[in-house]
Length: 277
Image (cartoon, rainbow, N blue to C red; front, top):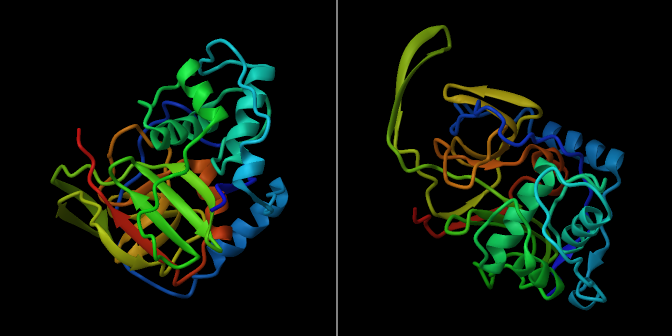
């Protein structure tokens, strides 16, 4: 099985950004189902996504990891090598610009989690060695459809498959599991909303979506793609290394920019596992 396709995306996520995202969205409607996808396709064309699959043999070919330690904020050839390698393997490091920023950091986190390495923004020898001989993400649904999304709550990652190949692997933050009650003004009335803040496991399909920022009664969601009632895959300004949402699956902003162009309506979404703090 191939391990990825080459991707490029602008780095929009800022490390340490303020949390403004909610988790669940209110109301459903199909009239804008195609707008998010169209916006994603336009964005993808603008940043030149390379859709040619990268076979495992090619992905593992002749990569010699640089020596030394890399930290967030680093610049230079070693960072460019890191970004290029992550892109080859299906992760989404943002623009290949030799600058270790927030977008590259979330790709490093996703890679480390797949490899069984405790995620850190600092790259040491163990992560470099893993980049030379990486493991593919564990398949959660072996007999799944060729086009599908697998959300691994245990590792806090999501994997997009296209044509049976891994197309994209990303860091996520799912429901915190901490019950909440919040008061918000919704539809002209002050109302109180309570919930479990869980991302339920199960088998679902993508339904409606919105392009850009969508306001729900629990916050704002960027380019949301809904798959279980009001639960969506969506961009957020804060995607920490632990479950933090009201129930949605938060994505780094630069990933949510391209996902609508890669993920259609009616595509299976499989949610498995549980996060252990």
